[in-house]
Image (cartoon, rainbow, N blue to C red; front, side):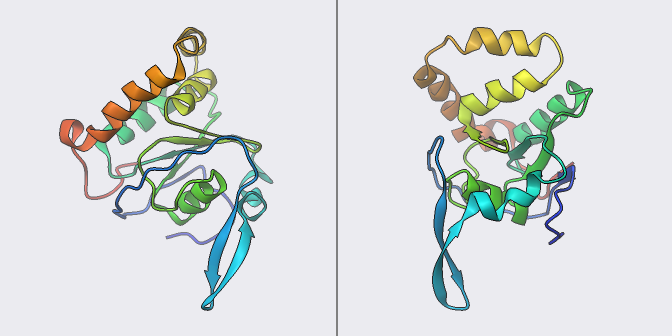
Length: 176
């Protein structure tokens, strides 16, 4: 597993974890971290700023053992000819740090997350934002879908996300 602070265009370790739901939107995120048995406050935006120092492309965080999520990453890579999005598994060390930056628990694999330099998106909002980075016709489709109320989009997203292992299965390790 890479421990470098330099972001990789794609990083996916072989890990499994459990889910724990959380939701946040725009805000400065700081949390307590335990260092040598002592809890200290960590500003996760500042702590993860190096991910965007040399590469400003957004990072898509995905569940590395979910077959649906791996298929989604393949779909995004095929429809992002200009390479506008980077990928990290939620289970990776960098993924966990970026989850903390987004105000989510480091073991929360319940949603795809898109992390930009200034903001993070989750659930259906992340999917629509990812679509905006893809080739035609997906930005136009995202534009139309944004008019659907977020509670309906997130309801549909949650139903698929909560049943993704039952419907699509899971793999022992990240395929990509």
